[in-house]
Length: 318
Image 1 (cartoon, one colour):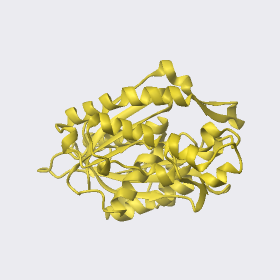
Image 2: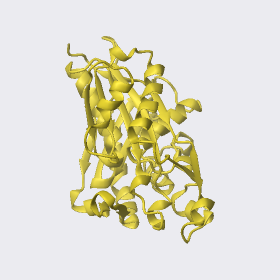
Image 3: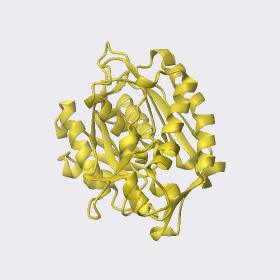
Image 4: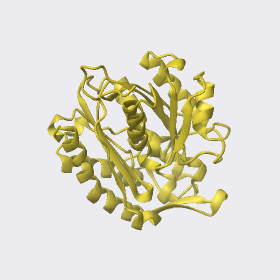
């Protein structure tokens, strides 16, 4: 059955127990707490155990979101996991997560748009619900980025971390406006080599930090502004701005260009680090826990990163 619109019902998040501080990293590479805070705004980050997988973290976050939604596992018929760091390409993470959560025979696929992955997946879930391809969709962003990190490379080891965040997407009522606005997405493939994994299966993530910074602080604010326009709101209407938690300086620069007050801006990166596709749902889950989200109001999401892929949409806070 085709429905008029889709909305997010609930969020859930999961972080590994191990906390790695800037002082801990200073024992591994030539850096210090002040240097890291000044450049990326991170104070600490979470690192998964060696035996903790992307599927483990996705399951934990998905279980929280499903419980918060009030739905039963049988009410979900599609699972999408946004990830760029699965341990193996097959089997996909989504099918494993659906099975572990007791969801009976869901459609299941993984989606790799790196740091923009969650926004891509939310758009895909919204389209599936509106088209009648799914009743309710579990969307998870989950990453074990530290499995691709060279701990002697201070340009990356200070930034990336592990975790998972999730959302449940369902249909709106007949008399209810849609809760997920049109997506604005794209890519700058001519700059894809600015963030890469080199060396194959045993390789490590490398990035042109300054190049990514210049691109993100120049290109992303117009994308977010267009998402607001397509959703029929202005930045002044936005009660929560939740960009990919890439770098606190990037986040603040984009928010400033949009004119969104600092208190409305997610800053989960300070104690979470950059968790790629998990960063936006993790930040949303934390803001909900902290009472920083206002139900029924518009929130602006924007993901951007490797590819260089980007996506943005306005959602109604559940």
